[in-house]
Length: 202
Image (cartoon, rainbow, N blue to C red; front, side, top):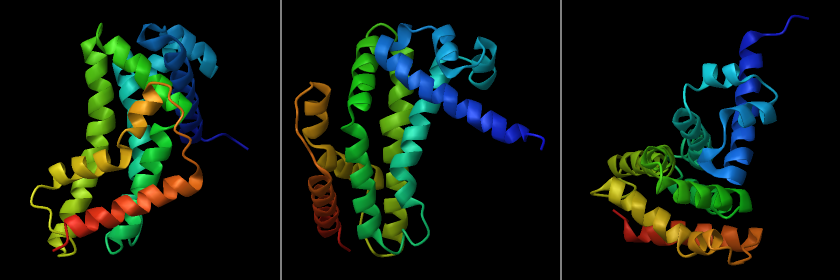
């Protein structure tokens, strides 16, 4: 049975992104594209064919993370059920930010940004800013439907994300054990959604 090119490309894309997370977490942005290619089991040219530069590769990494975090806002029925959609968003945001790999990646990105500002911009623009923008779009839809009253959806999105992450992300970046089990993550996510909806009730 012949292989489908699109499937091959998708598989290579995922392998490259997975390898990039590992290598960049271990070595920072100074890590070579050769090492990423070796870890992914592809040629360096393949990496460059998919992503023209390291900055573009980092943007793709962050875009994949943003897609995972914001998926709950785009599922069928999400707009009609803002409480569940926001709680799901909060849950995955917390879970993603608190993983050891995510914390390690952000530490190296923050350190490297002092030397290569363009890469810091790439991480921020394609990561936190993009996820907040998608959340703001969701809040704007809810406001238009009369279920929320967010005069400034972007500001409201920043408030919600900040309320969810609180000091937990800072603790994670500093290597402080906050031990958030599934029950506590779920409780925090639901409480954040509840309080946010009360604050921005129409």
